[in-house]
Image (cartoon, rainbow, N blue to C red; front, side):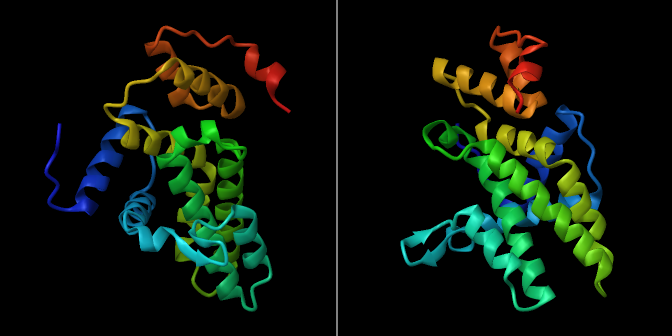
Length: 201
């Protein structure tokens, strides 16, 4: 089915709002607006991808982190951390299916993105412009929940294969994703309560 969308921003806003309500996740209005703006921006490939010595691609997260930590000014450092958080959230939210075929896993993106937003929250609160501090703080605290919401936005109508079901189970074990647990239940798989405790490292 093809849905006509008159405004990409409105589409992301409505989809995110409905998904968060369905998943019983509450975020502040400014945080919701921030995520919608980020999704709208990254819908344009030139905003997401960068020109690197290896071609046009998304820079590895560890490179982004290094650049942010070595920034020449607090403003550049904040911009680098923001980019790291935004890219991590977008990639983990919209390209989760691709992680099954890659060495770097979704939990790495969740950890890196959550920490970037947390550090950024502290930095902007101490700067002269603390208004976004609570937004970045909420993004850090609810990073996994927002990844779950974006997964649902991106996967509506997707049919899960056996490999996907195994992947969902692994995702649940690694991250405790409530969405993965609900999907597994819908697909007839009941995650064992003790599995996460024994698997976590």
